[in-house]
Image (cartoon, rainbow, N blue to C red):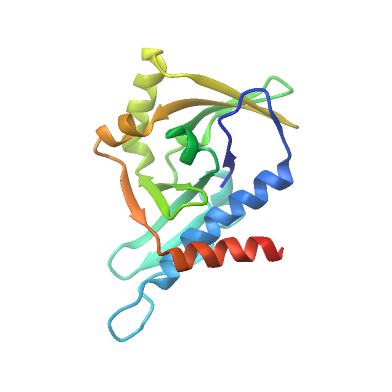
Amino acid sequence: MWLLFHLMGTIHDFHTDYNVGKLGENLIRAYYNAQRTADDKRIYITRETKLEEQIKGADLFVMNNELNYKYVEVKTDTQMKDTENFALEYMIEYRTGFKTIGCQMKTFPDYMFYWQHPTNLVYYWEPEKLNPYIVYWLMNDKHKKVKTENKKFFSRSILIPKKDMMETKLVKVITVSMLIVDKVLQNESMD
């Protein structure tokens, strides 16, 4: 859910990041809720995750009769349209010194959705399958790493060009209806 920034040294406000991150969740939820059968019945049911599911890294629970159920994490990136990079968070470092893996390295969610805000492009992949590539990119040391400061922690991310992500053949793209995107963005301005 967290909003991803590619700028190093910027302190981010939790509430702003949280609200923009929620937009991404709202977009994915609206996308699934808009999917209908020929006789106008909903194909998917979505709900926010419970606290224990959120702690494991999932933002949404998506269910249908064919897929059974899937957990989804959603990232909203406001810089990607300008940078053409995915910011993949691999570590969180708290001010206390405690370190934990970043959202991209978690494998509880079945899918990671990555919204290129404010466009209608959403990328997605299975974290379990992409993680070996992230480890390789970190070890290879040819991609830029950034540290983003929040009031309570530092987020460490690696910037991966869109071209490199797509070459893995693991990343898929959804083109969301602009009607859905506009509705989600309109709701943001009403808050």
